[in-house]
Picture 1 (cartoon, rainbow, N blue to C red):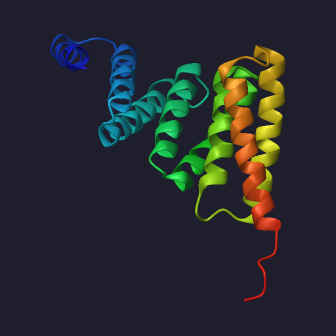
Picture 2: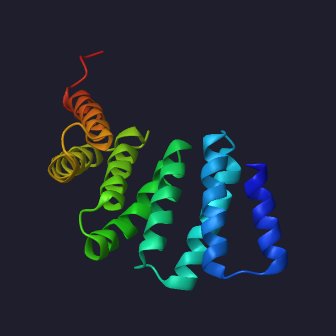
Picture 3: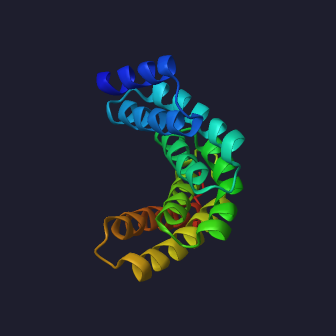
Length: 175
């Protein structure tokens, strides 16, 4: 982390392309996240995402990559409504621009998890989570195989979503 922070500082002093600076900052944000410095990671990821949107536009692969990272950090911090809003905007773009690649599938996985885990999840949210995760798991299995870590992870999230849906559909016993 200290090496990455020094690199950012040096690049600011000597000047570098804005795109390269954003990439370096994105790497630093991921390091912050791995070290549990989640607030710093979130602030930096938000800045990097905004920077890529301004520099390259919403449809560029780098913008979509950092949007996925940003959404994952929002989810990890239990900021599900923000994650869902970002992903509702970026998933259709990723699907159109990138197709069913790893970033698009991870976005859909994060979206399904955010729908499921939200304290404000409605029955419709849980149904959407199950549908989203079923499709993401099926596509991930076809593209990467059943043993791929993302396939098994999406499968576990799908089980959680199905359990939450069953629990919400089951009427509570009279009081």
